[in-house]
Image 1 (cartoon, rainbow over the protein chains, first blue to last red):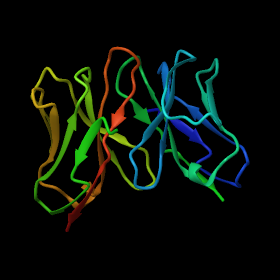
Image 2: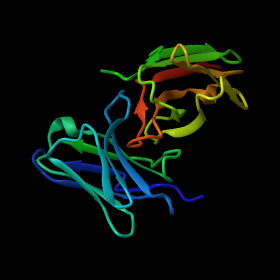
Image 3: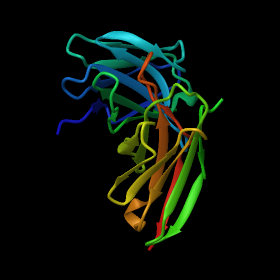
Length: 111
Length: 113
């Protein structure tokens, strides 16, 4: 079965640089979520999109932005990177108000 | 403020034993309670989930017990195996309003061979 696809899997950036993470949801899932998970932490909700419109916003820094495109893929853009942004970033998708399925995550290391 | 409180933080169980992880929540609007299993460097994978209209759900060696009045739910892993060693997260969501999961803080389970 198709799963949530994330790219890149690993990314190393320097402080103050910009990073972009991509997510391809499971086909026919209409909702996409972004979560951030620090080392030893639980996943923290950042933002979600329903049918390409932002539906909810969590603890996403102003330096971060995201969008969902016409083909339903989503991108998380992170600018002015800080050391504290180093984390595992998960994209997830779900059918309307149903079980959420997570991708394998993108490791971001800021040096 | 942690909306979903999970305990214990870590758990060591002998092979064949029962692993029990507990979660408590405050928001009575929560109406869907999944459990996720996460291996290091991997995404959380759905294990089992329950809605508040039932008090227990069993799938293989995994059982969720749900106490609506106490606003608590727990995961029981019967006949625990070394391959069950992972981090387990409970979560809660509401199907009304905006839909997202609020996760507990996680329990790192180690099953000794």
